[in-house]
Length: 525
Picture 1 (cartoon, one colour):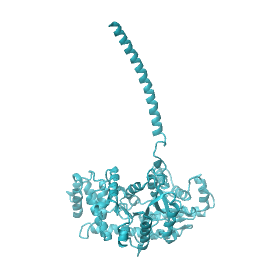
Picture 2 (cartoon, rainbow, N blue to C red):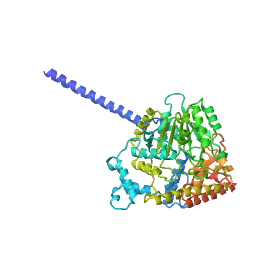
Picture 3 (cartoon, helix red, strand yellow):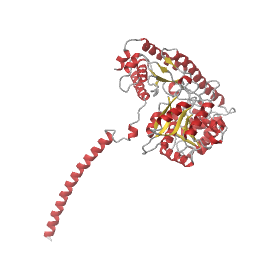
Picture 4 (tube, rainbow, N blue to C red):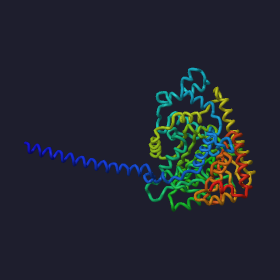
């Protein structure tokens, strides 16, 4: 027994010693592996998805960060040759000083704080609308989730709006609400992507295009197939350019869709019926899905050129088109006259899309749980505004008309003003909220742009921001003619803001144009 006991004790001590050594060694190994893991995951980009890692950040984002930095410096008392930064680079009307629509804000206020209904602070029609909207929310609260593709009540309102607009039936189940129209576009593009196949999917994309669109396509692993818009024709779509783009890129990718912006972003072109028919015919011949951004459909101000939806034209072309062309159109709260960009809600309508595919749309949208409810309710207000008999109708109509009038007058005035500056040519806009002037680059810009990865339009915008406190958007490269440079100017801003911003731009531009010294080179080296 003693022997067994001693032997057992010795074996136990030995086992404990061995175990302790193993644990110590294991801790070292685990510690080393954890360190290596953290180093790989936290201190480098090697572990990041290659598609995400390779996304080229828009130059406008860098300039917006610089504008924020300059604003913080001014607030801290740093002396600048200007008192504030004026941002006319992107479509954020409320940021620039445009006022929100009273009816929209009153209804949302009542939905967020129903106690307002008891105090009789709101017009009767607003109170009635608040009660109806709260009834369709689970728990009568905007704090509840909704179906991934949106509240059915709102989808029904959107379908009724489309039907009134086009005179063609629309189904609520073909409408999908998302956190902005770009989110809806991302869903569709990701479904189009080829995945692991060697030949990537291609999407025909206008040049110029919305500045965020290349990032959306790149994120999805989809190739951008550029088709050149015709500047001298007011940035119209040329069918020959569509054929050229398809022929040029077909070997390197599998084109599956064509993207169109109508009214054009950032060109301001509004397509007529003939142009839309030509694009639809091209899509039919080449078996392409039509992706149509119609976000600025309420901002057409060119006399004699009304907005016509692609769906309306498609169904008026006859059954051979209306029953076979796959079309997805997009709209958003960021629409010009409402301008509720921060509420983050938009929608897409699917036409002639396979029901199984639409089910996948819903599945992918589930990854966001649901679009913010306040944004969904604002969509309902956008597509179903006050009736003439409602108490809010007069104020609503006056405010919307004022916004449209401001946009139209700004477009005309800014177009004439920019064209009077040396070396700038600007096509007139027929709709939308941007002008897209072309810069004839002075020699200083050409010299400085020889720096790696720095384009002349970016240098122009950065120096304008630093010297005059005005932020405009770089226009991006023209792949067909790399000598062309453009800037992007938002015109949906208060008239006094636009006049101040363009006066500063003109002062900078004249200095740049007239100055034969190399002040820009010294500035940016």
